Image (tube, rainbow over all chains, first blue to last red; front, side, top):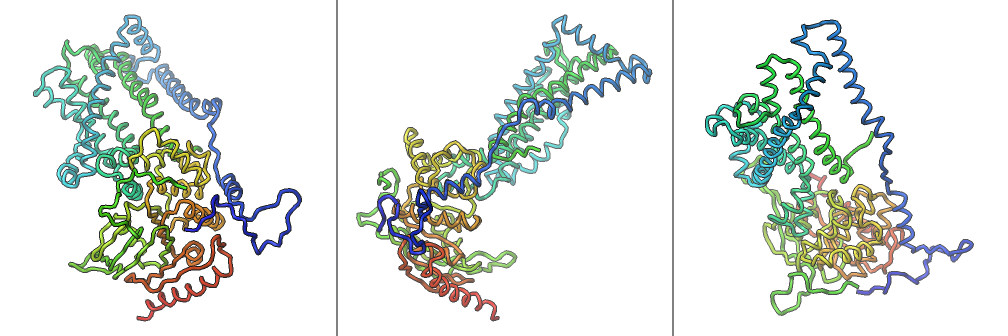
Length: 312
Length: 268
């Protein structure tokens, strides 16, 4: 094929009558310059929001909401809306926090539950991921267990506590079994939904690049499904945590240690409303902390990388 | 320009050298009509077409002529109902949408293509940089897809297609979604890269001027079913411009023919 050596053409353009502006002659075939100009005009600049703005826009609103709740709560206590054994004051609950902090048991409660919850969640992750991949990619498997898997999601995991105790006894295995039964369907379903939403174009593009079978799963399917998968993980964690709390409240045994669910149950048995409140706050706190520290940054990172995060 | 490294697996099976980039012989394709029992719709009818090594061919046709179907068949994404298709190795394919993976940077998109081709890890980065340079996007290695303009995305997509080191590049209306100025620039760019690399191109479009602007040979497909209606050899020397009078003249002739083909469908 005929080709000039470096793509620069020496032939004089007929439409140009040789007139050149003062200084540098404008080459009508200066493709590189033209392209650089177009690129500069079309590109978008992406900047990060300054810390101050983040504080006023992201931190201030929730703090305001929390303060408001505390104020209303304190007002209700002052107005004696309910007897003290039903509605402890914020300072009573704070006293409970201080006490368990001074006794050194506060972190034990939290850690007992959180370590169980996270370990159970990781196991659910290890089982749910290949399961979801199988259901999404193998027609027979999808037809066979797809409906059951989505049905299981709507089954409250408390229902599993009774059979788990009978099968496994009052021990940690029983806790993990309940977590798995609650979280695995969520994680698997999230991945299936993520895979189903992959634009077919990505799969075609992957195939023309030579990605088939496991290489397709590794390089195309999993990364493309990541946003849906993450949503599934988030829900999977919520299910893990809820299942665990249900299991801890119902099943108690000295060997199991005192987790947050157990703390709540103890508070009820002792008719100590401030202890019950403490337990509920801690359960909520852990849920929010995990969301804020793990899932939210992960999700934002993934979405921002793909240009899917719309600010404002 | 491109060094002929023997990394791809398409070492010719027989001793005779392959004399075509793509050979399409009596290819027909029908699809089942939904809602009927065994009803078939003929989309492509007895297509025979050769693309010579280094040749630039455009396939031109109105909607429903099956041009994209034909491209899918050549790409190996689908199988013909009859006839045979031979290509010299696995062809690369570029789409109307850039089809870049948004979870990877521009450079990593290209490196993935290299990796799937079997290029050793150490060689991927320099090769990706070289390809980006070829499409004049030196600084774009670490850019995310959404940070690039439409024209830049298509150029990265072109670089990724070239990373497959195929003898044949299939292009499915790759510039249809771009604005006129950018498209014009990319025509120049594609012509330059085609001449530098010596790759064969089979380019599908419904834009007559684009077809004439780019190709050595324009193949007009009729619609429903797609048949080869006519062929033109374009002798206008490169580099051409879309507003060249020779390009315009041939475009008028081809447009008349294309309109005639379309009119036939309104007559019953």
